[in-house]
Length: 156
Image 1 (tube, rainbow, N blue to C red):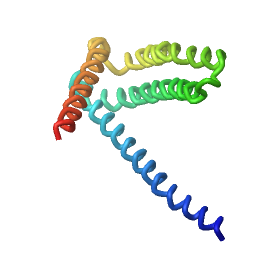
Image 2 (image 1 turned 90 degrees about the vertical axis):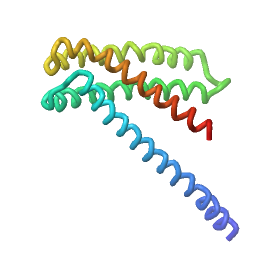
Image 3 (image 1 turned 45 degrees about the vertical axis):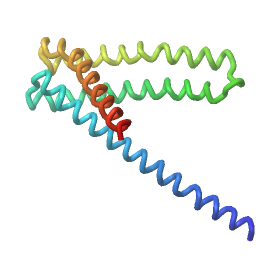
Image 4 (image 1 turned 120 degrees about the horizontal axis):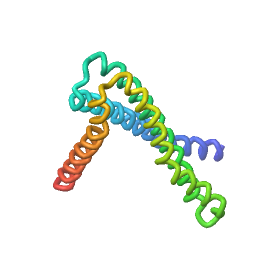
């Protein structure tokens, strides 16, 4: 009987934690969706994309971003795995993680280069050139907004 009560107590404690994690995951997913939509609007305006271009371009662009996110997540998981091992991490663990971390930008660059060729079928040469600048501008604007939110939050 004591065991059943202990198990029920553990479940009662764990359920809110699991529910909170699911809520956090859903909130995070919604945030990423909103940022992606905002980025679409921003890039469409900056590059002066037609409706037809937008449909074709953002299908490709989202594929590229998803692939680069997968590469970044793989590197992050590897890094976290080595950190979690702490003192038990071997030189081989460090070497493998370092290789993945240092290859991350190379792999992302290869993905971008591949998609650049696909973008050439949708964007004008000028728009293709402007894309990188527009991405940097978007990131700067997003970071400024984030910084303002943090400052406003700190004032409260």
